[in-house]
Image (cartoon, rainbow, N blue to C red; front, side, top):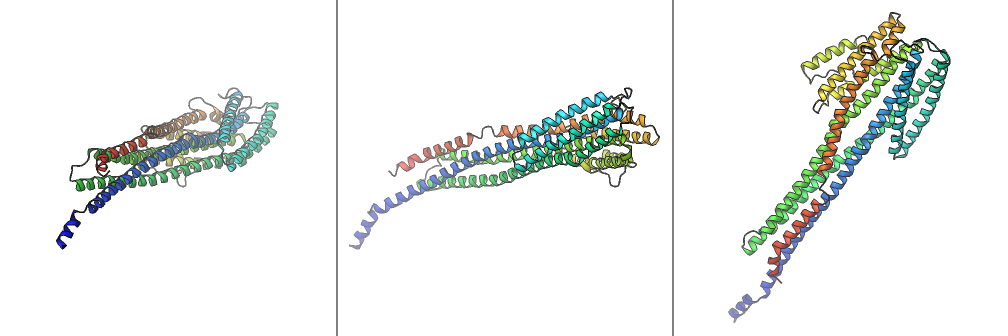
Length: 479
């Protein structure tokens, strides 16, 4: 009797049905997990690609141009004041190689440039503090231009030879320069700093997010791969059959999706790093160098137009020289020899950059083809301009004031403004190399994201379809 009961129990279909139900459930759970992970991976990659596009747009097409525009504003303001000083310097003399009319024309060109830069800054001012700073700049500019108008009127009413402006015009010029130095330039510098800080924050946020998302993408990819492999191993052991071709294909697509997503974010991050660190950091320092260069050049003109304050302007020129090329303890008397020695050491070993300042920063961030040669050209032309400055001061020391004014204001080859213009062109060319690299990095990153709007979803759809194809027959056995 006991033997018969045991035989009945073994023959009972209940245990088989339970095993079959458990098998189907396990298959469905594993398949569901794999499907959910594939969808999550695709969604995360699609969302991240959208965020990366927004970040590239914010940095490449909004923040960076705003920084450049405000740095350009600082340089244009300085050259406005330099040309105003030149108007007073040359007077009615027509034999210096540079005339009052030419100085006024350059002043108007810079004035138009300032207006355009302020319009761009106003359009880009999204936060209240920055908008208020732009309004402060506009108010300060209005006060400065009022003083300029008085200076020009008083100068025009009293014709004079070179280097002998009317006392009343000089007094108004002093007020205008004080307005520039006390309000306009600090406000312009602050505006540049605000935009630069905002760009830096945006870059750091993008960088940190991309790193975190990459970790998540890799993690989801590993989990998806584990789910698919577990499913295939279970099916192979449970049914003692060869691995499913659709499931193998689904695994391959899943690997491609995860690896492609990680590679996409890594590539975008590298392009963004190249744009910001390699290119834009140099652009910013070179734009600031150009602004300071024009400020120093204006100090040279102020030194000549206002002999009573010549010592003050000579000190200001030296301070700005040190901002551009800092050599420990160098004065105007020792700067040229110290720079010669530093350049000789650098030519022997390019790693031996023996100066600080804006040019020191740039020479330590040389990255792109042609950048080193362009940087060397800019620095050697700056060296020539500095030598002309010493000639100007020597002429003043020798009592040849008119000769010093002619050397300072003329654009003829061999004269100071010619040397400054040559240096400025080299500086613009050097900035252009970095600007093109910046634009190329941003464009390359945007191209790499061009298919990210639909490819992740398509890949996930393929994985789901292959899952269905690979499991349909197995699950059909349990219906």
